Image (cartoon, rainbow, N blue to C red; front, side, top):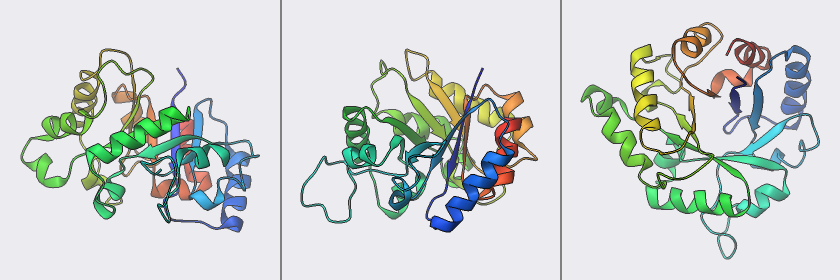
Length: 230
């Protein structure tokens, strides 16, 4: 079954960098999986005509108005995005986004027929206290348990950019707790220090539906390899 493999560029890149990245990635790309690229918002429209499925990295919880610096779901759609990340731990931390705000963003995306990719994950102190399942469940309380066509990206905060990866049984336990929250089939992705050396073990030993790749996605050849091995 085809999986979703998402490249999250975060606040990285330039027109020249992305142009080169696309060229190199497509030259290496041999995966049957579905590839999504979450570019910084200024570059979405520039590269909307390429052979890529694009995602936003965040969105406003309002549809329009006096919200200087914000980007609406309708604007993302106009720029060629089909998906959008919401609830990423970096947005929760730096922008102090609450569950209530993230739910409003979810609704805005749905209204514009864009697919939200809801990111959840626990900090190290929660993991060490063995409270991961409770923490994830609370983050998911914002979504109706009967919601259809959900994509949830599980990214333990303590793994992002650290090179640390949970034990397989820890990943699977988290995924099981996420699936149990909903009454209908959902897609659950994993993210956090994934690379071409560990992707087979993660993909083969868990029932994830794909991957959300951060730092490693900036290397087009490495990302292509991850997508092929997933």
